[in-house]
Length: 63
Length: 151
Image (cartoon, each protein chain N blue to C red):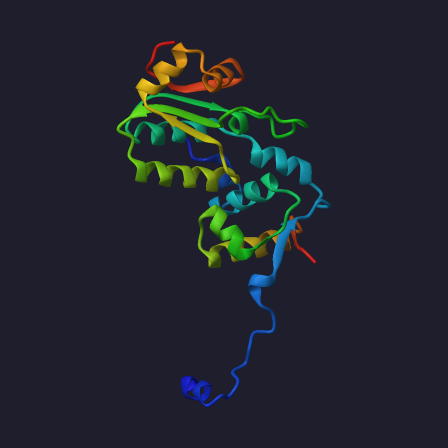
């Protein structure tokens, strides 16, 4: 079976899961803890990916 | 030493921002907002294959039907309301495995899913009496990803 394309294209399975979660629930905003529970990944890994996505302006911190 | 200080009531330095307070959301002004959306919400063939494998390992699975969220076009304005996103007919289903499978699926697709399980006997009964749930599901848009019942 071929590798999951998106996970490899984006370089991170967690990143893809976070994006899916946020798009499914758009425009709601979430804390790191909520995101990590929903995507079933460690808070530390989730935070790293969220910060990475934020630095690309794909996501933003809610005011 | 830090512990001792705490006991004596000396305040230790608190982080300036409580990280759990920070909230994140998608930035609608992102240049490729819609393109990225179509890309990540598209369900892939590989995903389905993995799902079939996992469902088969839950027990004696006779039928697995996907509908609703698994078939909906992410760009569609109105979504078809199916009675279940995933419907499984089987016997001797391992409950613990099933729970794990469902939560991993939900983590994978990013939302909760409507799931229904029936054993073979109940399904046969409902199928033959034109039960509303079964009829609506099987007459609407759906796909049988596992079908050992031969219909």
